[in-house]
Length: 345
Image (cartoon, rainbow, N blue to C red; front, side):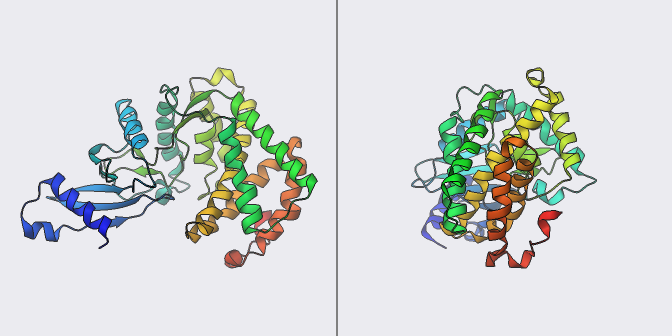
């Protein structure tokens, strides 16, 4: 057991008021699957009650946004974990245990409609919250995220040198996507609202985790994260049915026609997919988390298919098809996926 884990165990023993040495020795911290950050999670069980412990090293992670948003959203009826104890100096939190059932693990054709409706309900609640207190998802942040595609995905991983024309094309795409995002209704945005950050709770319903990076941004962003998820694929006709349903139920629905909302959804998806391709590569090359590379093909295919739908992005779609996808197909890490014919599916 490392020093931080020893400190975490000492802290949780104090929170649970465990004074019996034998019980203290028997208390174990069981690792729980984490996320793409420096945070680590453990489950501890004491007197038939389980808790989740967050270990967020202060030099890497700031717990304050998590705590503030958790309390605000919980008060608004959003099902986020209750914070039971905190130590910001050490970077330790004790949280309500939501169990182990990620939405991703139970999403099937026969369950998807009901589960997504529950996820829509939580998302509508989030979008009705006052967003002005959150950081702005502004042009600077949107642009910085998309630069990850150019810097990490194209340059560092694919070793692809852009021509001047290709660089100009990518810059024009980025600018158009930024304008589209800022023209949408601006609401509270979770920023990573996908099937691995939503949980099926033991008592039923959907629980929301990993919300500490919430911002004020485009109304389609979280819906894109959910329905154009990097970890699961649905037929396009089904996705559009869900998009239309969400739009019709939204309090700001009158501000966008159904077609305008569909386009905003697609274009917001392109911005997110550019970012995510870069993040997945960065997680591998910088942080040693190579598993995320397996999720790049679906993310890139979503980007490519959206670009192909709109004349505004025809040149970019051709760039992806002629320069990026062939290079991706050659990556040794992805050879087991047999991608050559997969793009046509």
